[in-house]
Every structure is written in C-alpha cells, then in structure tokens.
Length: 112
Image 1 (cartoon, rainbow, N blue to C red):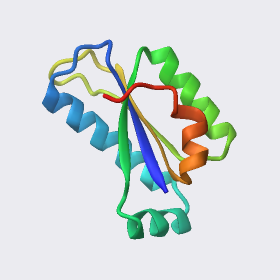
Image 2 (spheres, rainbow, N blue to C red):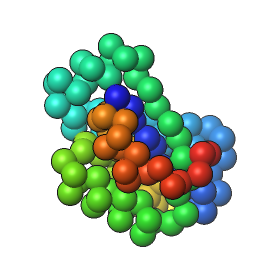
Image 3 (cartoon, one colour):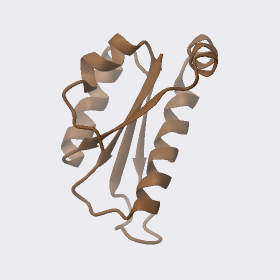
Image 4 (tube, one colour):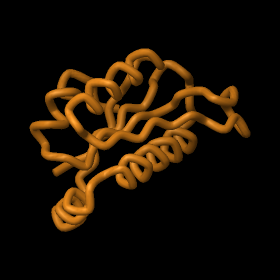
C-alpha cells in the first residue's frame, strides 16, 4: 500500500509551501479511501512518495485516470494567502491503494 503525491514543479512554490500542499493532498485523498485501505496503509507504515507534475492539466489527467481505476484522490487548490494566486492547483495525491494500482498511473513521473 502506498500513496503518491504529485506536486506541481512549474508554479515556483517555496519548500514550506510545497510541504504544506503535499500534506493537504495526502490528507484529502486519505479521507476518500475505504476504511480497509486506511487500515492497511496505516499498518504498513503509511508509505508516501512525492513526484513532480509539470502542469495543472497533467494533474487533472492523472486524477481522472486514478478515479477511473477506483482509487482515492485528493486535488489541492491553493487559497492564495501567500505565494500563489487563489485557486492555483498545486498537488494531487493518489491512494492509499495497492502499489501496483498506483504505479500504473504514476510510475513514469520523476521524484521530487
């Protein structure tokens, strides 16, 4: 079981902003997971991998692919209080779900 968080590399987030957006995405996707997936993921150490996304469009396409496979997702739009314009899509989490299921969608993305 794992979760992959795709963070946009094209919007120029600082390190702290990036960390916050990844955390928001992770929690949102977790909240959409089944109770069984939540339990298995927690028991397995809550594995997370952060990868780079190149655009808002890419995050939307990945989310659609994940949803088509029945995987939980969490897409984050920034509130715009600090570095980014309100509504900027910053991150997408996929999972927790089986490694193979998540990898089918995210395996080609570079690590952050």
